[in-house]
Length: 440
Image 1 (cartoon, rainbow, N blue to C red):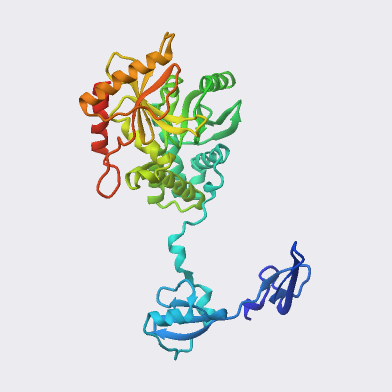
Image 2 (cartoon, rainbow, N blue to C red):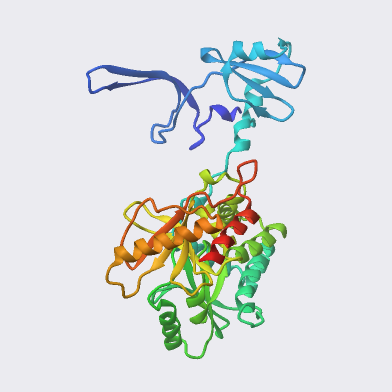
C-alpha cells in the first residue's frame, strides 16, 4: 500500500479536494488563497496538507545531476550522488550557466525527493534547546540531570553517559582534594533555601552548587547557603561549587567563601571527553554545543576586526589583558548606554589609573578631599598632556569634561594595534599599553 496517500495521524485514506480562504483587508479589498489539498476522510482527525505538484526532470549533466522544473518556471539542481538539492532559480538561468543535455532517464522523482537533503542546511546550525532555555533554572535542570546519571545503577542504561556523569561529579570532589566514591545514592534538591542545587551523595557528602550564567554572587549569599546546609545537614562534608559558564573579572569573594570556581573551560573538557567516549544523547550534545558556541564568541576578538567586536569579544580581549596587567574588567553602565571596561592602576604613587572604555584609553584621576574640582582637573589635565607630549604618547584632551571623585583628564582613541588584515596585533597592543603604565 502506498503510505503517501494515508493520513500520518490516523492511517485513514486521504482524498484530494479544493480549498480556498477569503480574507478581507482593512481597505475593503479581498485576498483569496485557493489550492488543492490532501484531506483525511476521518473528519475527527482533521489532518489537511497542501497538495504539491511533482516537479518534472527536464535536463541532465551526465548521470549525476538532474534539473527539476517546478511551477512558475522555477528550477532546482538535484545531485543524485550526494543526494543534495540546490536553491531554486529561474530554470532558463540554470540552463544558461552550464552544459545540459536533454533528459533521457526514467527516475521516480517522488522517490528521489523523499530522502533528499537541502544544500543550504550545510551552512545552518541545528536548533539547540539551550539557545532558548537560557535561564539559570534551565541550566540547573541540566546539571541535575547529568549528575543523576552518575549513580552506579544507571551504568547499565547508558554506560557512556554514566561515565561522563561520574567524570563531572568526580571533578567536583577532586577540586576539593577528595577522592570520589562509588555513587550508590544521590538525593538532589533544587532551590534549597535559595541555593540552586544541593546534592546529598551516599548520605555523607553535600555538594552545593550555586549556578551563575551571566550574573555574579552578591550580598554574602554564598556564606548564607553554607550556613543553611550546615543547619540542615550538620554531619555532611560540604563540597561548595560556584558554577559559572560566562566569565567575570575575578573570583576573590568566591574563594573567600570557600567555594571552588567551576568555570566554562573546565566543564568543556568534561563534556568533550564524554563526546569523544561515545556519548550521543541529544541533551548532552546540545549543552556541549551551547558552551562551545559561547567559547567561540569569547575568543572572537582574535578573528574579527575590532569594529565588529561585541560584548563577548571585549570580555575575551580583557581576559587576555589580565595575563599582563593587574586589572579588573566588567560592564560599566551610564546614561549614554554603557560599555565594557578594563581598569588598572600603574606603579606610580599618584592617584592616576588607566581605563579602557572599549576602543578608547582614558587616563583618570582620583580626587580625594579637593574643594575646587574643576581647577584640580584642569591642572592635572595640563600635567598629563605635557607628560604625554614628552614621551610621544599622543594623548588628547577628553571629548567630554566632567567633575567628580574620578575624572578623565586625557584619552587616546587608537591604542589598539592591528595587523595588515585588520585583526588585532595582541603583542603590539600590550606593548603600547605598557608605555602608559610606565608614565602614569
